[in-house]
Length: 243
Image 1 (tube, rainbow, N blue to C red):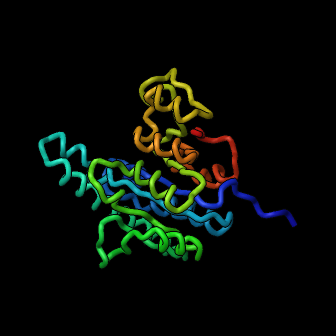
Image 2: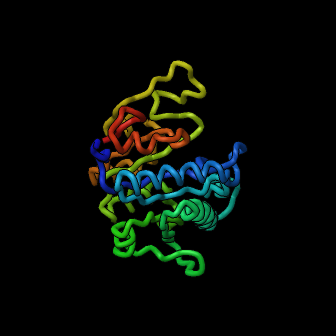
């Protein structure tokens, strides 16, 4: 009998943009996509015995900077974006529970009717009990992205890596946007400093700096391809590793 596969990290934060869950128009929620992502998460939790926390964005409904760019109060606009992330978190929770994966949504903004408030020790306890934890509403503060929220939560729950899932066929970090520049080439590995100095659009600079200061590796990979979460966790050469 062959040995069970061994994951290289025991606890991770999976960062998903809202657009990764969207319909082809880039808006709303594509239930088939959400179900595929849920299956990837459950496979990691059940078959690889990895504690999985998820941070979701809300760009498929609202982006704070969009409102600010047309004259809306920036704080108000960012709070709208936080609420959008809760919609995505609840959709992902439902998809996970439909496949018998216990899940908790925890929000940085209190809304006790639909989710638990974020409490670090409670989040860790959920993970220890085999539950997937979805962190919504970012950090609860305006002017900070969900990338920064992912980095912050990863450090707080003692995660060993951040898996940043991209979409639309982009499978890592490139020298330029591969959709616009046919000569763009993919990096297999980068240092945090290289990401910052080259101005590569991986995560915002606050998140990258935080990961660097806390020695949190980041893997950027294509979440839309089934099996890729497992591939990353098993250490196969896909995506781009930042460390």
